[in-house]
Image (cartoon, rainbow over all chains, first blue to last red):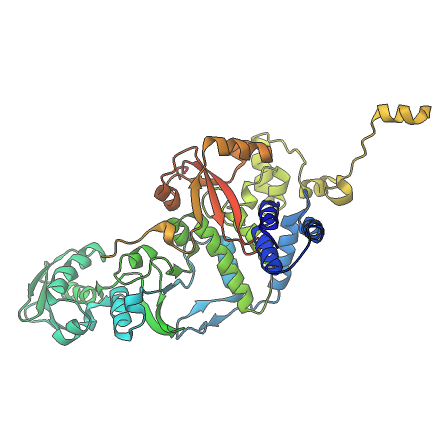
Length: 394
Length: 83
């Protein structure tokens, strides 16, 4: 192969991968100009055959291709998806979740990748996990309710604090603030003694025991370290590097933590990805999540069907669901919308707004009993009178 | 604190480029479509903000396609509708 042929491959109207494959298979081979022409010609005709023709009903094909294998999926699966003890929804419920574009999946998880300095050292990986995992105050010391003085006393354990890399002063500062801001409980005063590592909480209402116990409950469960939404972190070694798997998801929060690789860390919450990384990342997330859910069940669906679904969902700049609050509900045609769900409402609203149906789609024409505009129904004969006249003369 | 976070560097975010007026014109004439027929992207999309796209711009997106290896797509920047 010479450089002229390479240039011609580059200029050919073929997909990137086809061109790359052609180049690698021809590299280092002796071929004549004639042979090359023939190869290119055949590739071109093969490629034309693989292309979807205009007006092909790809949506219906995709729906069937995902729907049929979907019937063979497990109805209910509560798997511990290979990853240590982290519960992840899989199978049909997960697929429905993806297509419905829920704001929050039923089991949000993240895979947090680490930068080189942290990824190969277990202790350093653990350090990052402490910055991420939400840790309530009771893990850092003993909490006692002093009934006599109407106080809640926290005796911090300095060893635990040192091990988890958080200063006693920080806890003294964070804990009361978090109870006020995050737990919305304000009727108390707090005082900290950094030297003795003691925090005392005093309720404003010193008469009520109920109030005191309520305060103690807040003190026990206030998150003083980590990210609030992330309930658990599991450190696992995969392919030589340590990866953190989390229960609960907060991309923005995790990206702020030192040591986290912000180029690879990912969540299974699609709408969160679309919010933080943009609609194109959301589209990729839909494709990857749907494909891995199907493949995990041993079902192979061609990516093109899933790509089509993902493209439709992300068409208007945000992730829309497939159902009646999204793609199906925003169709132009009244009859098409009515054929999907809540028929009467759609017909009634359309009548009030005096909507017109152009009968361009498939379902509308099925409803009114006309041939659909696909396949043989799409063919219309056009006779040109001029040519006919010529035919008669000869 | 980690300040190195860059939306465009994330592996799930494909390459975004702002197209020139000239390129937009040829794009629309090759497919024989109007500007409004392009897929949309919101003006406050993190990737659009990162490349400095403005309302009315057309963004070229170069995706890693599982089938074609590489595929180009286009999106028109529009304002996010108020809920």
